[in-house]
Amino acid sequence: MWLRLFLASLKRQKLLFFLAFLSAVTGTAMVAGLIGVYFEASANVSRELRKYGANIIVQPASSGYLKEEDVYKIKTIFWRHNIVGINPYLYGFAEVKPAGKKVLVAGTWLKKEFLTPEGNKFVAGLLTLNRGARIKGKPFEGDQGELAVIGSSLAFQLGLKPGDKLVLSSRQKEIEVRLVGIIEAGGYEDEQLFLPLKKAQHLFGAEGKVSNILVSAVTVPLDEFGRRDPKTMTRREFEKWYCTAYPPAVAKQIEEVVCGSSARPVWQVVETEGKVLSKFQLVFLTLTLLSLLGSIVAVASTVMAGMMRREDEVALLKALGASKRWIGRLFLSEAFFLGLTGGLSGYLAGILLADSINQLVFGTPFEGKTSLFLLSLVVSLVVNFLGFLFPLKKALSFEPGVVLKG
Image (tube, rainbow, N blue to C red; front, side, top):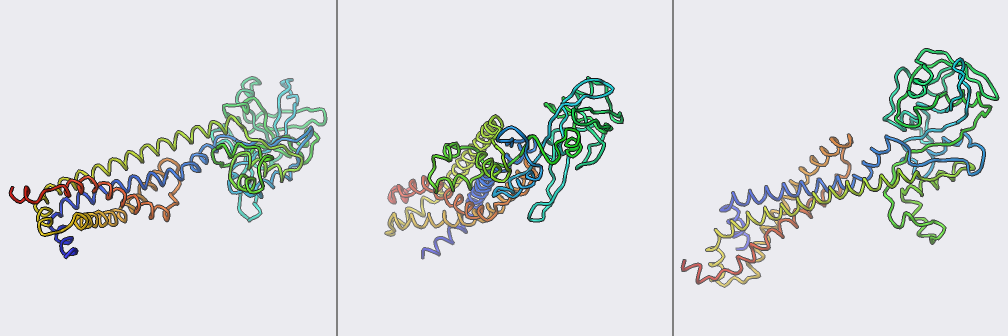
C-alpha cells in the first residue's frame, strides 16, 4: 500500500516533483561544484602565485658560497613535486667598458632544462620563476657562451641596446660579451647585468659556486601548528609538521640536501599568500552556504505548494487511521527519492561546474571527481530533507474533520 501511494503521488504531482527535482539538482550542483573548487583552491591559487617569484631563499649558513651541484638536489626532497621553480645566482661587481662604470653582475640561468631523478624534464631559471619578466630581444639559454642580458633601467643609464659588445672587468678576469636582450621584470633585476652562470663563475674566479638559490614551492597556508618551532615538538608532531607542505618544512628539507646552507621562507611573500588564500576560500565558502540556503528554500517552497494541494489526501489518511509516523515516512521517502535522483544528476552537473571554474580561473582540469560523488549525494539528501521538514510539519497538523468538511 505504501509503495502504491508513493507511486500514485509521483504520478499526480509530476510538475511539482519536477520543480523540486530541478531545485535539488541546481542546488546540489552549485554547492558540490563550489565545495570541490574550494578544496582545490589552496593548491591552485598557490600554484598561480608561484608564477611571480620565489617564496624560499637558500643562502650559505656562513660566509662563502654554495655548490652549484647541490642546486639539482632540491628536486630530490620529499616535497620535490611541489618545487615549481629554481634559480641559482652568483653575484659580483664588474666594470663595464667602454662605459667605465661598475655594475652588479648576476650569473644565473634564464632558462635551463635538466632531468630529475625520476627522469622527468624540469625547466629552471629566472624566466620560469618570474613569469612576469619580459625580454626585448633574445634570452640566453643554459650556459651559452659570450652572451649577456641587461636590465631595462641599467640599459637606459648606460645607453646600451641588443647587439652591443661589452668588456667586463673584475679583479680576477676580463671577458668580452655581446648583449642579446633587455629584461624588464619590475624589480631589482632591472638594475643588473645577467650572464650565463658558467661565464660569471669564470669572470669572478668562483667555478662551481653560487651565492644563493631562489626557490618557488607550492605550499599550504601557515596555521598555529605550522608556525611552531620544530625543536619544541615531539617526534610524532615533528613527523606531521615535516610531512606537511608548510613553507618552513619545505625550507628545512632543502637545507638537508644543500650542503652548508641556510634556507628560510620569504616571510613577506608567505604571509601575503596566506591572506590571499584565506580571503579566496572565504568567498567560496560564503557562496557555497548561500547556494545551500537558496536550494533548501526553493525545495521547501515547491513542496509547500504541493502540500497545500494534498490536504484532502493527508486528511483522508488520518481519518482511515494512518499515524503521524506512517505519514511522515511516506513524505520522507519522497524526500529520499528526490535526494537520490537529485544527487546523481547534481553530481554530473557539479563536475561540469567545478571543471569550468577551474579551467576558466586556473587553466587546469578539476581532479576531485570521486570525492565529489559522495559529497553530491550527501548535499542533495540534506537539501531535500531540510526542504521537506516545514511542509511535513504543516501536513501533520491538518485536522481530518475540518479539511474533509471543507
